[in-house]
Image (cartoon, rainbow, N blue to C red; front, side, top):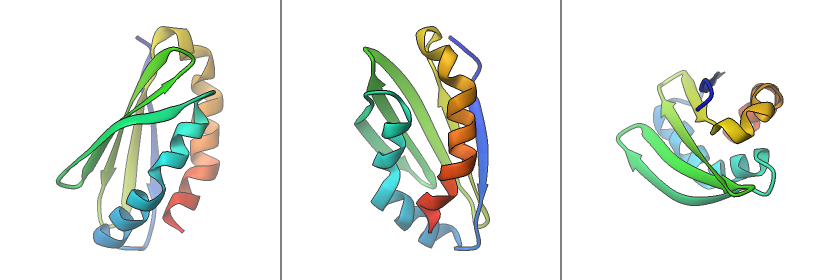
Length: 100
């Protein structure tokens, strides 16, 4: 197991609006993993946990939503560790678009 990728995505939407926008677009995050698709997801309070499967691997993702920030955590299996830095960069660049 590689180190988790963690990225903070600041916003000015408030918690409920941020959750609504995430609900409508979190599946796009699966495209950040080559061949990825969301296979399961579940909200628990203000946290969305979901699994992305791609290249025969599973990636656990958690999005913790607060009034001014979304903290994203991707836990990559060892076989996808080579994608860690490109994924972090893409999340920092493209992740805020989820909240637009």
